[in-house]
Image 1 (cartoon, rainbow, N blue to C red):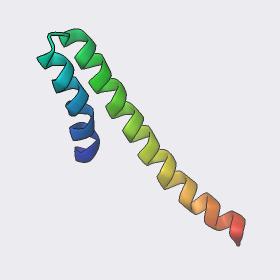
Image 2 (tube, one colour; image 1 turned 90 degrees about the vertical axis):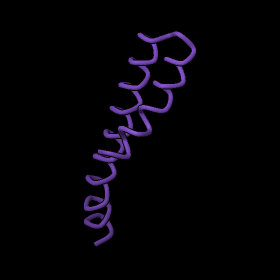
Image 3 (cartoon, rainbow, N blue to C red; image 1 turned 180 degrees about the vertical axis):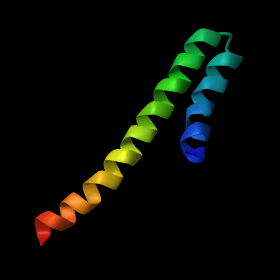
Image 4 (cartoon, rainbow, N blue to C red; image 1 turned 135 degrees about the horizontal axis):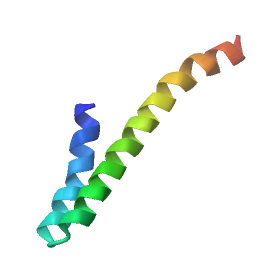
Length: 54
């Protein structure tokens, strides 16, 4: 989760620096959720793929 938070914080910080604080927060949250969702899907897809090949 630390990596996802760092990745989410980068666009957030960039947009905040540009003066778009609320947009920056929402983009940061969105990216963080997306990265976490991808990580969860990846964890679930690996055992499923192994079962299909067996």
